[in-house]
Structure formats: structure tokens, C-alpha cells
Length: 124
Image 1 (tube, rainbow, N blue to C red):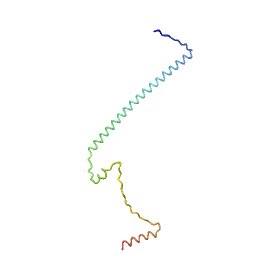
Image 2 (cartoon, rainbow, N blue to C red; image 1 turned 90 degrees about the horizontal axis):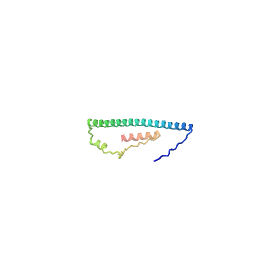
Image 3 (cartoon, one colour; image 1 turned 90 degrees about the vertical axis):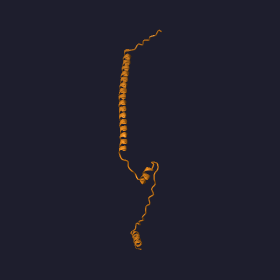
Image 4 (spheres, rainbow, N blue to C red; image 1 turned 135 degrees about the vertical axis):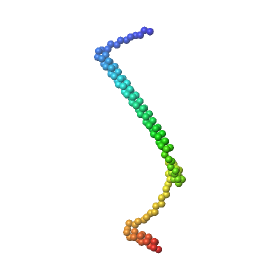
């Protein structure tokens, strides 16, 4: 196969500008390669730190399990088991609280009359 070779004539200024552009592109590619290398190093460090964290969490979980097995278990009375063991997070117990309402009058005469009535009730 015969190839046709084409020659293009460039002016001196155009040739210099082309060389500058090529060199600039090479510099940018090298900077990108450097950034990618730094990124891969940081990703490896991140992976190592995450692995160490996972290992520490696992060791802590195992330690807590051993501690729970080592500590004595509490013997909870049936009354307390009923209140604490049967409660589920989604159910809440409703407590009815009876409050005696005291009625106080703003005037002193009314308060004196109430005290007098209480004294009469105690004596009689």
C-alpha cells in the first residue's frame, strides 16, 4: 500500500506556538498524573484508617460482650419485671394521677372562713 505523505509548511511563529501548546499540554498531563497519584495515596490511607476503625469497633464489641458475661446478672423481682420487662418502645403506659384541688380565695375573709370550717369539723 502506498501512502500519500502530505507536508504542511508552518511559519516560524506558528511552529513556536505549536511547540508551546504541546509542552503546555504535557505539563498539564503531568500535573494530572501527579494529582491522581496523590489521590490514590490518600485513598489507601483512608482505607487503612477505616480498616483500623472497624478492627477497633470489633474489639470493643467483643470486650463489651466479655464484660457482660463476667458481671453478675441482677435478679429482678417479678413486680419490677412486669413494669420494666413488658414495656415495648412503641407502647407507653398511661399513669392516672389524682390531684386534690385546693381552692383558695383571694380575700383573707374567705381563707379565714375555710380555716374556721376545718376547725369546727375537727371538734365536732
